[in-house]
Structure formats: structure tokens, C-alpha cells
Length: 602
Ligand code: F6R
Image (cartoon, rainbow, N blue to C red; front, side, top):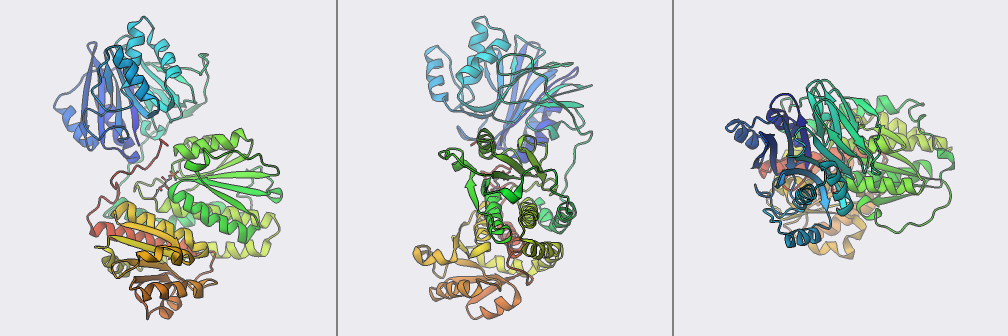
């Protein structure tokens, strides 16, 4: 989602700003822009589309200002267009903004009656106008920043440039992440500390309500009460991890193929008996677990719930963060832990739930890929996913790592609670996962021919039961997000209660039906679908595929493995299927339309 970058230096900053935006590209965006302050004038350059389009405009105009702010915008209020791109300007003030101003309609009406004119449809544009009017009324920029925070409702991070304070970037964080940093080359702000690698030496993560002033040689932070705040200083990496596709056609394909390595890394870190010793939660006494996340991470939670019940004899509630954050609070008794799954660690809804759990004094564990993210820093305990940077917007290796870290945690909890045999059986299966994933990846050629059956489909259905049901949801999500084919996942037993009406000879159906406890149940559902003309692809081991070969037209093969392990291995062919359908349909696989890698607004 939106990315903020700002720099103040002893040389023109336009190149630094564009480089900063380049590094924030992974968040997803549809336009980009910068403002620099040059000879007392705010100069704005924006472009719709990629940062490269902005770079081309800048190289032919060359702003020379030594202070500037920059932004990649993921459209929320108003279409992607130059006039909606940030920075937004009012007399003497430019603003970049991440988040949402919820009361922008009222603020805009009030400002209009005072003669302010608006050039965009964004919620953001009220901010420069409010600051500009405060300064015009005599307030110093710092005071104006304080005043707007009293008027804006919503969560946001902003960077502000004023003619009044030509050597200072003003910034404020209220809900959305923002980092202030400094080094030999100057002062900076950024949405993500990784974007500052090699530019700044030290950084501070602003806390909610913090206001910062960033000059070339100093950063000053005030907390929400206006007092000077001393935040923990962290060192910034010296080099930016440049990412390449390593010979693969897309990052997504590279990341799918990295999964045996990720699985091995997770095993090496979490298999040892002391792997969870840092977590000071008495798992033996737990009454309940809450698992909270969004999207694919939520589906990983659904799998983990089943494991917790089967391996650790523990009930879990799985919550969609976007719903749970507004759910009524029910006073709980007993021992509870809340586990948050988020590859980015910046998902706004998940973070709101983290705050909620903390306010209820529930112990919190973050399972997160970016340890420097808000979730990584603010959960009581953080478990790294060890997936490495995931560039593809559709999660693959991070989803797998979520399953694997949760599996190891569940095995640990199971053993602590006296379910030693179940925990041991689970661990033995987990040890074999890297090999099983590698074997599944070898079936890619066969998966490409299955993908051909989906190319012209308008709608696709995924069905499964038990521990694989969340994978039906995940398979459908993966297909829709990158191929734009409408797809739904259903519990196979639910089909008769409505969804079977969707089935006809134009509907490809993926039935997750490997041998195991529920095979005969799913097999019956598969036959019901076949009887209605559905075009069935069976995902299963060879034995299961053979026994459904009279009704299934194609198959996705996985190795024969324990029921508990099947959800992990099944993820691989589902990812490859979606990938090859999307490639054949010509989608932008790594950056699918309308989606962002890091969902920092609710
Ligand atoms: C889908 C996908 C998303 C994320 C969701 C939560 O492929 O990646 O559904 O799982 O946006 O993101 P995180 O895990 O960063 O909280």
C-alpha cells in the first residue's frame, strides 16, 4: 500500500527520493510523486504507473531541492491519476500520507466554506490545507502539526514540507508505520526501515502519536503529549537486499521453488527442543488459543486450529482480524494466548487486534516474516517465518512458512501438554516435508497441462474436508487474485446446501481428496459433482487419484503422507496451478491488479 519516503541532505535529493520509492515498490501502488523545496518554491512531479515513469519525468526536469518528500499511492479515495497522486499541496505546504482520514468529508466542507479549493478527490488533501491555514493564522509548523492531529479521525502516517521551515521534514504517526532516520548523508523518513539501507545509519520507529522533526543533522521526537521522547535507536543495514528473479520468469515462481529451502530453514530453527524456550507462556495451563489474521494468513490459522485440536487437545478460536477488531469483548477467564499471523507484520487490522489483545492483557505471539515490522516489535513474543523477502503479491513461501512454524509450535504445545505420541508423530512427518515439497515441485509439467483446463473458465470451485478445507479456500484465493477467474472454496459436505447449483460442464472443480480418514466422504462428494457435469481435477496421492479416475479428467499429484501433513504439501500444486493459469491468461503475476503486498489501511 502507500509508501512514504523523505530526505533532507546537503545535495539535491530527487535521486534519493526516487530510489527510496523504488525500494517501497513491493508494497503495491498505482502512482508515484515527489515534492522538493527549491529556492523557497514547492516543486511537484507525479506520474501514474510505475516509479520508472516518475524517474523518466524527473531526469528530464531535474529538481535541485535539497529537501523533499515522496510517495507511492495505492488508490483508496479517487482513481489512480496525476491529480490524485501525492504529494498534495496547499499554499506553502506539501503532504504525503499513508492511511485514511475518516472524517475528510466534514473537514473538506468546512475548509471549502473558508475558501480552500481542492484539486483531487483524495481524503489526504484536507491535511495540507489544515496545516496551511494554521500557519497562515500564525502557528509554527510544529504547532500546526499538533493541531491537525486533534482534528483528524482515522489512522495515518504523514510527512510534511513547509516553506516556513525549509530545512525540516515534519512527520507524524498515528496508526500507520513510519520510521525517522539519520546518517552522514542527512535525515530521512520512510514507511519501512529496509528502504533506508545504505542511506541512513540509525533509525527510530515512531510510536503511535509521535511527531518528529527531521533535519539534516538531527531528529527530534515528541510524544502525543508534546514531551520530548527518547525512542530506541536501531542500526540500519548497510546494503539494500537487491532482489532478482534468479532466472525464473516471475518472482512468484522463484518463491514457489524456494519452498524446500524455506522448509529446511524452519525445521532447523524450530525442531530443537529449546526452540520455543523464550516464550514465557505456560502452555500446559492454557484453556484457549486465539488465532488472528487476514487473507491467506487467516487460512493458515484455520489449519493450525485443526492441528491444535488433534495434536495438543486444545481448542482455538480463529478470527478474521478485520472482524475481530470490532467484535464485542467478552470478559474471559482462564489462561489464553493470542497468536497473530502476518507475513508483513504491518496489516492494519491484525495490528488493531494486537492492541485489543494487549488491552485485555492476553499474552501475544506474532508469527511474522518481517521481524522489524510493527507486529515483530510489539507482540510480546515474535517467531520469525524465515521465508526471506517475498516479492510476489500472492503469498506462497510465506504461507508455507506460516504453516510450518505453527506446526512446530503446535507439536511443542502438544508435547508440553502430555500428548507426546501425537506430537512425535507430527514431528516425524514435518521432518520429511522438505523432501515431499521438492517431489511435488517435480510435477510442474503435469500441472501446466491441468492449467489449460482453467484458461477459459468464468468460475472455478475448490472442495475439501477436514484439515484440507482451508487449503480449498487458499487454492481459490490464489487462483482469483492472480488469474482474475472467480473461484470459491467450499467444505465438500456443504455443496448440497447450495453451492452445487454452480456446477455444470463449464465449471472446473478441484477436489482435494488424498487417501486418509475422510477420503471416502470427499470421494462421494466428487461423484455428486461428476453426476452434474463438473470437470473434476483430483488433488491427491496416486492411490486416491486412481480410485477416482473414472470421474476425474485431470489430477494434481502429491506424495502419500499423513493427514496432518497433507495441508502443507497440498499448498504446492495449488500455487503452481494458479501461477500457470495466470501466466497463460497474461496477468501481471507478481503485481496483480488492485492488490498490495502490505495492507496498511483497514
Ligand atoms: C494472499 C495474500 C493475502 C495476505 C493478507 C494478509 O496471497 O498474501 O491474503 O495473506 O493480505 O497479509 P499479512 O500476512 O501480511 O498480514
